[in-house]
Length: 309
Ligand SMILES: C[S@@+](CC[C@H](N)C(=O)[O-])C[C@H]1O[C@@H](n2cnc3c(N)ncnc32)[C@H](O)[C@@H]1O
Image (cartoon, rainbow, N blue to C red):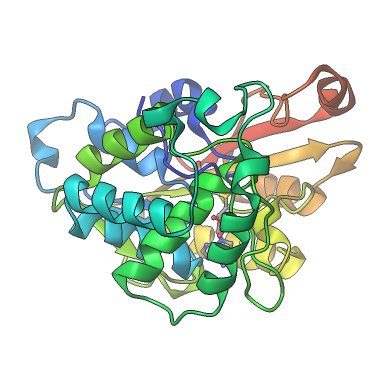
């Protein structure tokens, strides 16, 4: 399975072995309308497929313009160009390069990480990024370097639209480089289309296409929902949107959480019942990073809802 170069909260990488066998074997175009780290679309596209799907397009959509522009930057530039720009930025901002020099060179060790050394340069880069104009290659490269050096390689913007994570423990190490190389090698075809729309704006999905929806889950919280909280109205609009696809004979699958820390998404369950859709329990503890949170989250029920069987 191909990893994402971005660490998305709620990313579906670990769930792919359960998810992919539940998707239809054949379809015309594949829409990942809440793509986030894009691992679902990229891995669906890399699977063996019937010859009839040779002209299929894979639409990677997210409302987050920064993320979509970054994917386009990856796609439109060679790895050589990207590495050279990233390394230039690492030099300009005096950031560490442990892949080349190791940890000792910076008086640091791998356990503690390299955050103390990088803090000043990272903050300067963050400041320059937040003050720079949007949407050119330089901006995208700065965004990517910020993610590499940020806390847990995550993405978070505040209400003003400023990137606001603190420095993290790691740098552009071999692991991050490999994720970029694998992802780049896979999106580098004309099969991928990147778009930056609200899901409500997809009107041209047609019979034969397959739509995967992985929206923010209303009863959990994740960093990308800090600014733009996903509420009941969004859930209801999405249910209407999926009903519309169903009426057009478009197959869909939606990931969601029906139960989390005692909260239940009742409207979701009602909609599934009314539509006669299939509810598949994936029994996956979605925040299983440590023992305590696993114990607390025992009641998290992650599901896949489909309109086909
Ligand atoms: C659960 S995450 C998707 C994770 C992704 N499947 C992965 O594996 O990385 C939900 C995504 O929906 C996006 N989003 C939120 N509201 C949206 C909207 N109205 N239309 C399209 N995308 C939206 C967020 O930016 C976020 O990236």
